Structures are given as structure tokens and as C-alpha cells.
Length: 391
Image (spheres, rainbow, N blue to C red):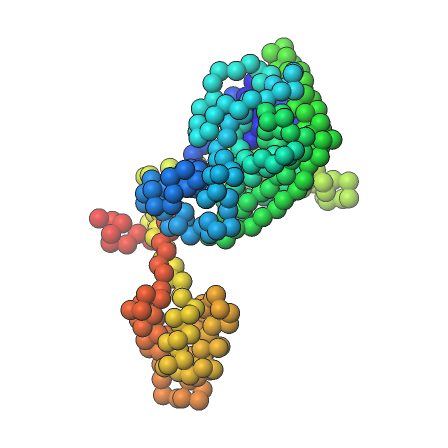
């Protein structure tokens, strides 16, 4: 049994995912997410400078960009970070295991479920649970989020509380987005009932598989990060079909056949996404020459972000306030597209100039004034090798 609080939603939807062999896939996105969580945990204990010093250099800009003033990370007197619990499904009790354990849970029984909440707070009769999410992967709303309800139940039982406030705090490019909900005593009882039901169905599935029956997997959005993905019979069958093991046919669409065709399409897209991710992981470490003469491997993509305030000052001094207003549409943004359009408008009244030269002049001035932030990414794709690649 491999049930954890973070996997409750998937286990609820597909109990065989607890029975099938698990493999863990480490990606750039998952490493960033883990690093951000660890950084915010350290902030609450060590302070910002020391916490940043512990972040790998490649992820430091992402951590530095987070607006900590909108997070509880800097309030250790009110909130605890990375709190691990162990919930006993049979007894409907829980206890705190420790803090900052890094998911290194001690041995426990199959009916005991571990989990680590990112942030925990307490009031007189309620627990506060906050879960950090990085990126924009789909997440159930706080009010119906099974993972948050599991954390809330464990914390409420551990600290003898009857209510909970749960929140999803999404962190993306420095922005902070909140989604909150309140859970009452009945909501917590419903979470306890779900725990019991999941374990009963998982035990039934385990006995069925042990008897030689095929796992009764259920496909859906929960498949995306499932650790049993590689061993799932449904995915293996689809992969064989995509690889030519059996033909894929397109039946005429009707109102009756449409839902099943859509489900197959979404499942195929999920498998293809996993295949592409495997290709990219391989090629990131070992770029692959292709018969076309191209190379499939990482390329460097440079993106420059213009400082809107400095751009407004420079454009006003050089071209006038109208150009500045045209290029800097809000106090926070100045894109190269808007800059180009603003300078084109200026050139209509000031002929004899070349757009490329004017843009270069503005960008050079911004760079000298520290008004251009450079971000480099390294996506894996087909590309024609340059001299540096060949060397």
C-alpha cells in the first residue's frame, strides 16, 4: 500500500494506482517545485538571506522573485512550515511526526497514512492549512480539494480542533494567487469517510490482482502525475496501439460515440506527452543527430524583459511623452512589440529614420541603465546545429 495524503485524489479516483508498481520521475518542473517549497520552509526559520544562499543558483531567480509579503513564510510565531502527520484510518486519530522531514516518514502500518502540509496554523477551534503550488497545472479548488481536506483532517485530529481553513497558494513568476475555503465538522467527517472508503477499495483491488485478475484502472486527469503510469495496463495497451501493435481506427462520430472517442484521444495525448518527455530527458543529456542533419537537443533561448519605469523615462526624454505613453501601456509592462509600434508612430512625423536603429538605440540605453532583465531557457527541440554544437 502506497497511500499518502498528497495522492488521495488519485487513489480515490483509481484505487489500482496504489497496487501497481511505482516509479518516480524527476523533472525540471518538479525539482523547481521542491526547491521553492524547501526555500519557503527555510525562510520561516533562517531568514531570507540564508534561505536564498541554500538555493541552487539555477533556481535562485525564481525564489528571489516571490513576494514574501503576501505569504505566511516569514511569520514563524504564527505558522509552522513542512509539518508531517500520520493519520490512522481505523482509529480516526492523527499525530504530528515532525517538521522539515522532507517526506522521510518512519515505518507505519498499511492503514496509517502519512502526509506533509506546507504551512500549518492554529486558532482556538480551527486549523489553517496552506498548500503551495508552482506553475499552472490544473488543481481542484480549495473547497473541493481532496488533498487539502486530508491535511486538514489530520491536523484537526492531531491538535483536537473541529474546523479548518484551507488555502491553495499558487506561485508563478513571482506572482501570488490565493484560493481559500472553510471546512466545518461535517466536512472533516466526510474526509475521514473518504479515507476509509479508499482503503477498502484498495484492499479489494489488491486481492483481485493477487488472484490473477487485471487491475481495474480508471483513466482521467489524475493520470498525469501518477507514479504507476509506467506500469498501468491501460497506458501500456494504448502505447502498443500507437506503436503499431494493433490498429487504431476512427469510427464515425455520433452523440453516443463522441464521449468514448474523446476519452481515447485525451488518454493518447497523455501517453504521447510522456513519450515526448522521455525523449526530451534523453536528448537533454545526450543531443541526438537526426537523419535530416538537424539535432534534437537543448537550445538556448534568450528573453529580455524591459523595465517599464526606466523605459518611460528614456522614451520621454528622447522621443516625447506621447511615445512613452504608447510604448508603456501600464505602469508594469513595456513589451518590445509596443515599443516598436510607438516608434513607428513617431517615425510617421519624423521621417528619415530606420526602425531597427531606433529600437537598438532604446534597448542599448535601457541596458546601460539596468532596465533590461535577461532570462535564458534551454528547451529541447529540433534545431540546425551551430558551430558551437558541432564542436
